[in-house]
Image (cartoon, rainbow over all chains, first blue to last red; front, side, top):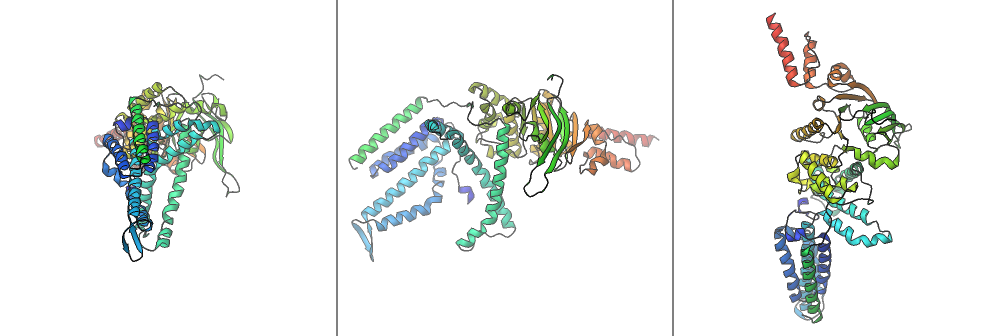
Amino acid sequence: MLRDITLGQYFPGSSVIHNLDPRTKLVVVFVYIVLLFVGNSFVSYIVLGALLAACIAASGIKLKMLLRGIKPVIIILIFTAVLNIFFTPGTPVFTLWRISVTYEGLRMAAYLIIRIVMLITGTLLLTYTTSPLALTDGLEALMRPLKKIKVPVHELTMMMSIALKFIPILIEETDKIMSAQKARGADFETGNLIQKAKAMMPLLIPLFISSLRRAEELAMAMESRCYHGDDGRTRMKQLVFAGRDYAAFALTAVTAAVMITLAVFGF
Amino acid sequence: MNAMNQGLIRTEDLTYYYNEADRMMPLPVLRGVDLEIEQGTFTAILGHNGSGKSTLAKHFNAILLPEGGRVLVDGMDTRNEALVIDIRRRIGMVFQNPDNQIVANVVEEDVAFAPENLGFPPDEIRRRVDEALKLVGMYEFREHAPHLLSGGQKQRVAIAGVLAMRPKCIVFDEPTAMLDPQGRDDVVKIIRRLRDNGDVTVVLITHHMRETIDADRIIVMNDGQIVMDGTPKDVFKNVERLKEIGLAAPETTELLYELNKTGMDLPLDALSVEECASVIYSAFSAEVRR
C-alpha cells in the first residue's frame, strides 16, 4: 500500500521536458492549472489534453506511472462525481424515485473528473521530470521578489526540498516498523475506524521519534558541511533560460489564447 | 603561537557535560582531555559506547563547544564564532547513518552542497564534485537518486560530499556501523586510500578493531578520559587492560594471547593475519625441531 505513494518522486532522464528550466516548468504548470478551470467545454479539454499528451510523450515517462498517482484519489473522485450527477438542477435525463439525473449534472461530473485527473497528471509530470532541488531552486528564483518583504524564501525552499528528500526514507521506515509491529501481533487491518486509528499509534510514535532524531543528525551534518543559510551561497547548476524555454512559453501562450477564446465564445 | 610546529587539532584540558533536565548534577562526558593530532596522520579513536569518543570528535569541528578548556584547529579557537566556517571547511565529518547526512535528491547535487555553501563559482564546484566522486568511485552514479543506492554506496557519497570541501582532515564517526560487510570493506578501502594519498589527515572513530590496525596511532577512551595512546602494536599488547574497559583486541592478538595462556611465548604485536600466521608457524616449527 505504501509503495503506491509516488508523490515527490523524481525519475532522472534527458528528455526535452527534463531539460526545461524549472522556472519555465513551474510557470507553465501554473498557467496550465488556471486554464483547466478556464476551460468549460469538451473542445477546450481536448486542446489542453493534446498539450498534456504531447508533454507526456516528450518526457518519456510511462503513462502507467502517471495514472498510479490517481489511485489514491479515486474514492474522492467517485464521491464528488456522484454528488454532481444527482444534485445538479437542470434538464432530467431520467428520474429514479425523487432524484433525477440531469444533463448538466452529467456534464459537471465529467468536467470534474477531467479536471482532477488532468491536474494530478500535469503536476506529477512536473515532479517526475524535475529533481526536487531544481524544483525548489526554481521556486526560490520565482519567489525572490518576496524576500524584499522579509519572506524567508531560501529557508522555506530548503525545508521543502529536505521534506521531499525524506519521503522515500520515511516510507521505507514506516514499512519496517509496520512489519516489526505485525511480527509482534499488531493488527492494522481489522476493526472499525476508531480501532484502526488506535492501531496506528504504535506505528506513529516510533516514526515520530526517529524523525526527530534524523532531523537532529541532518542538521549536524549540514552544519559540518558549512551550511549557514543563504549568505554567500552559490549554486553548481545555474538557472539559464534556453531556446526550448522560450518555445515552451510561446506554446503555453498560444494554448492560453486558444483556451480563452474557446471559453469566451462558449465552445 | 607558531602554527607550523603545533598539531592540526589540539585540545587543552577539554571538559564537557551533558546537561540533562532530569539529573540533579550535570553528567561529565569529557574530563580534561589533552590531545594533539598531527597533520597527515591516521589516528583511530577507540572506546565502548558512552566513553566520550563521539563527543570528543564533535568538538573538532565546533559542532560542540567546550565547557572547560579549549580546542584549537590550525591555531583557531573553536569558540570564536567568526571562525566557525573556517574551522569546518578544514575539518570535515562523516557520520554513522548515510541517510541522515545526504541533503539532496541527486548524488552530484548532494556532493555540491558543501562547496555551494562555501560560495565557490559554478565551474569550480563542478570540478570539485567530479574529483570527489571519482575518488570514491561513485562518478558513474552522479545522476542517481541516493535512496536507490546501497548503504555502502550512500556512505561513499557522503564521504565525497565532505571531500568536495577539500578539508585538511576528515573525522569519521563510526562510518561503518550501519553497513553490511561489503559496504564496510568499500568504506575502509576509501579511508585507506585517503591515508595513502597522504594529504588528508584521518581521524577514525570506531569499535571495529580490524579497521584500526594500520593506523599510525590509536587513542583509547574510557569514561571521558584518554586511557591509552600509542601505535597499534603498543596498544593491542595490553589485552587485559583492553578487556577491563570493555574492548576486545583484534582477533589476531586475541589468538596469540590465548595461545600464550597455554604456555607458549608468542609476541602479541603481530597484528596482520599474515604476521600472526608466520609467528605461529615459526613457533611450531621451532617446537618440532626441538
